[in-house]
Image 1 (tube, one colour):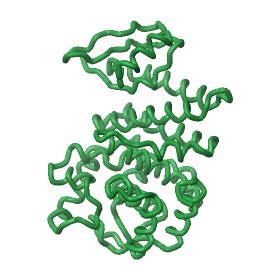
Image 2 (cartoon, rainbow, N blue to C red):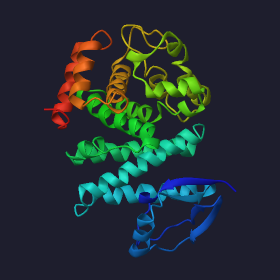
Image 3 (cartoon, one colour):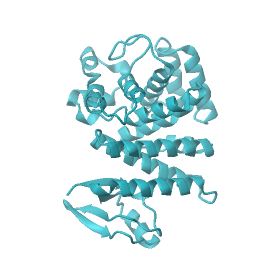
Image 4 (tube, rainbow, N blue to C red):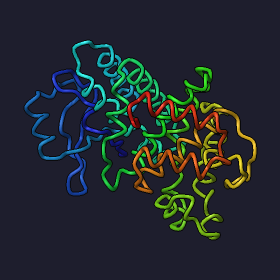
Length: 313
């Protein structure tokens, strides 16, 4: 029997759960809740107080979970009574679950569908709630969740930059999906390639550069032939480290607007999460040190996005 992890905040108390819930304890999966029952609020609060971060479901129940989550997201985001902070928690947890699942099983159509649910909910959240992006972006990541946090940050800011660049809805959807997926190959790469995530590109050695595209290649090997993944998503993942100067892993010197958008935001967020710069200082470094890597007009529009979202003055 195989099990799929899901973050506890993607389950809501006081509503019927159409699948069994399990807890992982001492190398065993213990049934916590039978199918068709509800979790009362007190019981749910007790779990969170005990720092239970994840439930597990039988992998065969992933479709039931996806349907349940789709409905929960729709109802929560459409509710005028639900505080924006609660909406943020749900979408943060749903998106993190999707990223973790696509990392674990990148060749699964079910995992891919989780990313589509996440991107749809995220776009609605940050469109309808002007403060949501800032709340999510400024949340600190636990050390073991930095990779997930990075993917989520890139998705949020790349969405706003893509809108600012007036990309089509299909292109924006592709950028968002690629943002959630762009680093899923890191856990499957060599130790040398995995360690590169903890470095900014400015600190790469010549040997580092030789390992730079391992995480991209490992992802492409799994997803390149999947008919349910749009070609633009695959292209964006392949080129997310490319820059106009030709110093990326594939030495590209021409990028379309969607590729430049994803690459720029990816670079910016790593300056903050890995380089430990403030949003303001990260932008300053981007504008000065990477002017040849990105178009000045794109950098300018990105600065306008950061100002509008309240991340810099």
